[in-house]
Length: 209
Image (cartoon, rainbow, N blue to C red):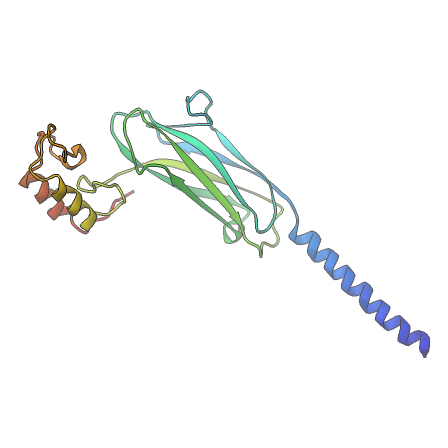
């Protein structure tokens, strides 16, 4: 009887230790993965600010649940018009990868002028509750976004901020201290009622990608 009383606690301890080791090993499984990078013709994606090394794929390295990995690249406007940058993801593999992995990005400026180079930081967050994923892949698409002419600050919507910006530059020309070329929508070198009316007409509209 005494042996049985001693055996049961030991068995429970062994069982709990086994469960702990399995759970720890599972949640710390390290994941190796790569994302393919695709871009519109007007967009160049590079590893360096001098734009000498193209980015064709991104290796996220070894990841564990709870990790956040950041990868920086440089984007150059290689077209003939300014644009706003849009990043989307597609072709997630495995099937449930997008449930546990979240992709986000940030750019140092919403408006990318012709020939300009900006840094783009991409982030991949792995959920603490990730289960059943040993490897995965997905594609990152760099696209040129269409923006509204009256969206002066390029935040994707024509709102009161744009009204204030145009109002501050009203009646100015390039020689004036309050001149703002971004508010001169029809490029006639004066910010007048025509530019104001463009803001009024587009007020409340949002950018289409």
